[in-house]
Length: 101
Image (cartoon, rainbow, N blue to C red; front, side):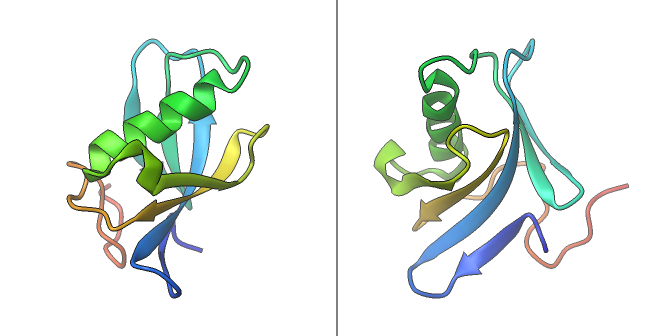
């Protein structure tokens, strides 16, 4: 399964994420079949989930309300829906492109 797939019911993408909280700096990169998201926020009281939504909203050029957590609220592995993305994050491969070596 690729790290991102179109949502057939909406103008949206389903993004399969693996979160690393308490990282030194925030970053996005594709690792295997997941988008690796490093957050400098701790996973306490949903703060990491909020930071994840905020970071993905900024990277895809949408409002925070357009990023919804579908699965994995208390897990590092999550599935997120991004509705009507307006831009593509720099450095990430488009669907169907092989990842950079």
